[in-house]
Amino acid sequence: MVFLCDMLITIKNTKQYFDQYIAAPYIQPLFIQGDAIEILSQLPSESIDCCMTSPPYWAKRLYSMKGIGLEENYKEYIGNLAKIFLQLKRVLKNSGSFWLNIGDTYNSKKLLGIPWRLAFELTDRQGWILRNDVIWNKVKGGLDNTKDRLGNTHEYIFHFVKQEKAYYYDADAIRSEPGKSILRNGAVISATGVSGVRYRRQIELSTALSEEEKRNAYQALEELLNEIREGKLSDFRMIIRKQQRTTHSDSVKVSGRAKELEQKGFYFLRYHPNGSKPRDVWDIMPEDTQKRKKHYAPYPEDLCKIPILATCPKDGVVIDPFSGTGTTMLTAMRFNRKSVGIDISEEYIEIASKRCSYLF
Ligand SMILES: C[S@@+](CC[C@H](N)C(=O)[O-])C[C@H]1O[C@@H](n2cnc3c(N)ncnc32)[C@H](O)[C@@H]1O
Image (cartoon, rainbow, N blue to C red):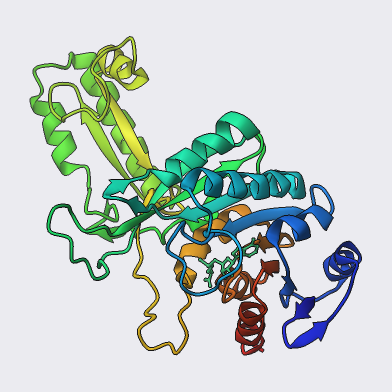
């Protein structure tokens, strides 16, 4: 069964419908009800730009009695997921990205390490390249009655690619707004208040720099302040020999910066003019499921934002083979991308397609 938002069409040929959807001039998601592996195996190779998904946990599922997560043991669960992700790899373009949100499970008091076991299965046996392991810090924990271990508030989001280089990645699309420099009494002051006064003084009083090194340091500092004035740089830090704590190994064998410090007596840390890149710990509150009538487990839209903006081109297509209530599709729509949602549950497909149709 295929849903296009509030349209329900029963078809036998998934590929034909997918092709029509890709060629069509709209971004409303395409929802396909069925088993992820069966549906994926009908889609054309190298046709999708980005996958963001969160499969069911192993042995915790209450919300549906079909599909992944009901296996007898976790090895079978990992095996079943791996089969689906091998199909996904075929369907993903070579420039594509796969973002996998997955939580762990305790079994007889033992934390199983499922996320990493699955990640290694995908890298070691299927050749995926792991680019990031993001910690999703849920900030507040759920109800936890255990008395002999810490409460759990995190899950993983793994970012996999198919090739080491030339995968699509738009770092500028996910940078935070850079701070603005200001001019005060004719002097430029960076976004975080660096004016160069303190560095000039440190250079002047330094006993670890030669006279020539001091002259070069002054000149380089002025050039950098000019770049800030011209808006080419938003901020910087200066590291001067024997003044600042270095942010690298002191060994010149392992660090280019240590070498620079040894040879020139200083170096700069330059902040990107377009703002800073997000780090790999994301503080995002989970969706509030308390008030919902039915039990389902949507993830927050914010979790999909970076994956879609950074790794799906503007005219690209996002897929979620475990689309549930359609959060990935909803986020893709907000950012003007086409998307395909697959779920084994007819009920979720209906919820998801209704949810997305409200955006119009
Ligand atoms: C954790 S939920 C996904 C929630 C989703 N991210 C959201 O925001 O609503 C996992 C989904 O996988 C679906 N599922 C389980 N086994 C499946 C399979 N073999 N093929 C497709 N979907 C499956 C479940 O029905 C459920 O909706």
